[in-house]
Image (cartoon, rainbow, N blue to C red; front, side):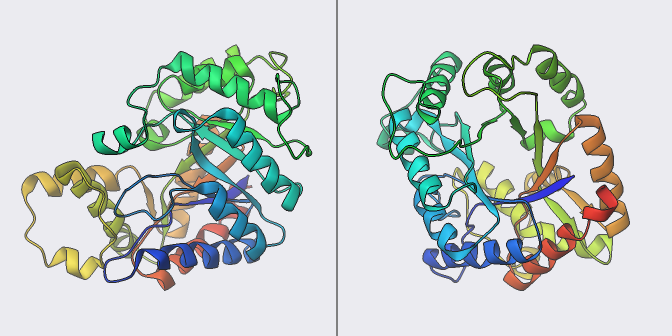
Length: 328
């Protein structure tokens, strides 16, 4: 079982936004030292709590800061870009860091209506996304109408499987990354069974030879269950508040969050967010992840863990990496 990280360059209350990018660089170096398989970054535009709006730029810096770990995007939001430009960006990255670059693509639009207007893209159909993916795959394999330069070795293309994404991945013969509420839902095993049945290994020059699944979720491993829940609180609080404010806030210390007056609605939403994470002691988390991986027949687990304190986050990453033996 491969273990990887997705880092969203979360900003923290009381610190400048730019510090989040330096934190991402430091985290990638630690991930490499811990022997993790991949380190991916995200794309979010004009979101107060996230500093990463240009994955390709950040990946170039990460390539210089590391030597071996695979680097990629989780993901590039394809409706916001021209496929040729994305292919050129990632081929440049692959030329600079050969054999280390992945391209994960999603179809999410901007976080709010003003962001979508600023991006000049307020709607994107599943059919458009599938066509853009196919065009992008053609450029990455020299099977398109144009040759994206520089010409490089292969760049693995992954689909973030939200909404119709799983069916699109099956038709194009691409691996999927399953995250969000779907990961822990009762519907996930059947949805992935359909993906595997419908997978077309020969549908295009960029198709994979077999279906592959990465599951992505927050993982909090601590000495006690209470400590794990404490570490999960900053991100759960930010997610809950984003649904109330329409803006995703920077991470705050757990102590500051507990000092606030909580509305019943907020408390309920925090608990809903906590339920989407796997948290607890090492034994508890290992058992849950092993069961989850078996249900999904997953090839890889990608942790999206965030918390306020950077030292706590480093300890969480070390504990996650330490699960490799238990997960097999």
